[in-house]
Image (cartoon, rainbow, N blue to C red; front, side, top):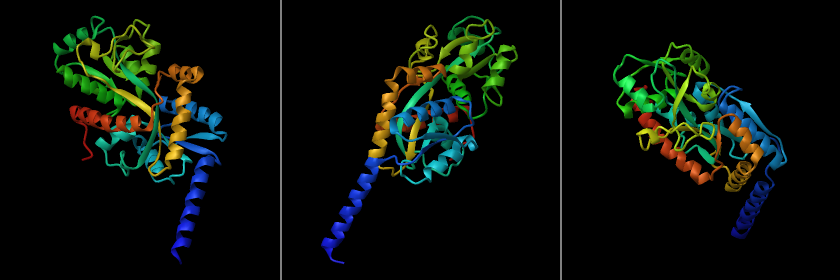
Length: 321
């Protein structure tokens, strides 16, 4: 085959690919959700799917694929065709925690093309009335006087609630015993019942009980105060500068997805955070809108891999390495 013909064919193929990307999508898009229906990640996925459906002109469907702390869903997306029709509603555990605690069949930095963090939610430290006072210092003083004698609830070993508490205990120089539960609901029930003194949980888990006399919310773990609890200081404000843990939910695609598709998705998601109704729906499930750029999401993954690695070591969780 003569070189001019080869160049002509290559040019035609490149033009055809560019045209296909410009016309994307031409069929329904799936967002794979790593958890069962009903949780925060599922809620963010469905809000995002509805928004993208209205913006892209084709259905965007949330499809739940739970199992192995989300690693099953992550692998499915990592191995999917990079054509923009299979997306991942990534939550922090799959990309920045689970790779530290178990061997996973994907590389969180190489196998995904980050699109945008849709929203973040910090955690809140809730304690029952067995803990005197109403400040984080009161909690620290009470626990410090009883090293290793008190327990805290977690939603399971290696979960964000567990690791957030262990990271705080390490930085505060405290020792407590973990009591694991199958999720946040049973954990909160035992804290409210007076059986377990403390729990670092999702905002949406603790907010409904924050006004009751049975749980005192002492601190939030984000870099700033939560809009839903404006009178509750952050951990950093109360003597632990630099302390910050949040979990995020964001859209990622398989590595190799064309840049034009990534940019289109990021642009449409960004428009969501500027929409009052979209942002309000996220706030109702305890999520602060973010909708950042692909490069910012990629940086967050790199930084949080280091942060949660520290938390895993503090917790003594079995390492995947």
